[in-house]
Amino acid sequence: ELKDNTIIVVLGASGDLAKKKTLPALFGLYRQGFLPRDVKIVGYARTKMDRDEFHKRATSYIKNPDNDPEISTSIDEFKALSTYVSGSYEDGAAFDNLNKHLGEIESEYQSKERNRIFYFALPPSVFVPVAKNLKEHCYIAKGGINRVIVEKPFGKDLESARELLGSLKQYWTEDETFRIDHYLGKEMVKNLLVLRFANVAMGAAWDKNSISNVQITFKEPFGTEGRGGYFDEFGIIRDVLQNHLLQVLSILTMERPVSFSAEDILLRCIPPIEQSDTLLGQYVAANGKPGYLDDETVPPQSVCPTYAATTLWIHNPRWEGVPFVLKAGKALNEAKVEVRIQFKDVTQGIFKDIARNELVIRIQPSEAVYLKLNAKTPGLYTRAIPTEMDLTYKRRFTESKIPEAYEALILDALKGDHSNFVRHDELDVAWKIFTPILHWIDGLNGPRPRPVAYPYGSRGPKELEAFINKYGYKRSGEA
Ligand code: BG6
Image (tube, rainbow, N blue to C red; front, side, top):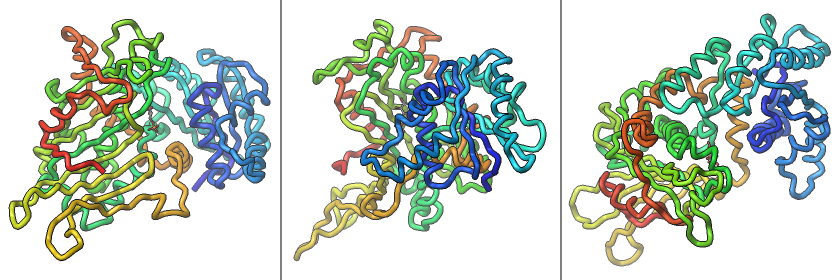
């Protein structure tokens, strides 16, 4: 149920997010035939440029390494349906001008229906003026739908998030608003629901009786690399944990959804994180790579964490007593995002010193699900060895292409499906969980805590081992 007569307006079209994510995702959808018939794309930003220049930027991140003629043709078609308008974000008259441009496109339609999707690839400082100007100058009051797609940061703590969302709500209803957390568009995150609710074998072991602890890990092998000025205002918890990893946690642990309020009911069972359940780190120069404080855009002596591990507890009958360790860091030894569910020890019986079962869902790179289990060593004696059942996607699903998260989410928004977007009330509870430690880290109630140092390119702070052991994690030789 894609709607014909649709225009997708990308605001902030000259910026990085649009160039790297939004426009390539729109192209990907176009190429695969997933955009509405007769769709038009309109870029809007402050930068003055002509249509050619916009096309050059808009397609600079579209991959066609082998000059495939079919892709080249699609790129030309994509350019032909894309136009650009420049104007300010604050000035109403500029939005009248945008509206005029949209009206000209729409004057060619066969029917009266007109649909407009506004994608905010914008810095948060202009979210509110743009939301207001769009509503006042570019809104279809009758005979079509209007939707806005926005993305974090949604404030810096509970109070500022409430203020921002409250302001946006004056202009756009919840139904018209699609808040992106791009982790919800990732294939392996979506797969969690299938693993859990389409498999009796998984579902049966999915609780405190079988599970000892859960680790949700995000690792990036690069630092802020000259973009630390922006990062320093937020820190790793706001950048990755409070949104992406918390969303993964909520899908992993919620009850079978009977309605879409299932996630926020789950989050309501999680009390604010304790300082004692937190480990903070900051990377320092090593292996020829600069430390965080060597980034010239970072304020000198900043104590902003580039690494954090926090443990969350869910107070409900299913999860009481199971620690969920969320950890994320920049400038580590590898790129990896995974969920690792560690099961309890087998009760002492005929086998001793048996490795624990672990179910690992590797979100990226190389999407996989694998279950570590013990099997008899082949041979004329009985000994159990740890091995695994391995579902690595690129080996098993050789014909399938894993979609980009942004493609999946933009398609959902075009269809009006809210299920993979972040709801207002859900965001509110997410901030409640993190705001007290964020205020502590920001030094609002006393001296700011000092993060421990870890070398660029390492596995993280050396204190991590003791931290996860405290929550019952037993290393069983990571696969
Ligand atoms: C963003 C963060 O939300 O997610 C970045 O702001 C981070 O700091 C990025 O690098 C990670 O996304 P992905 O899809 O590469 O895992």
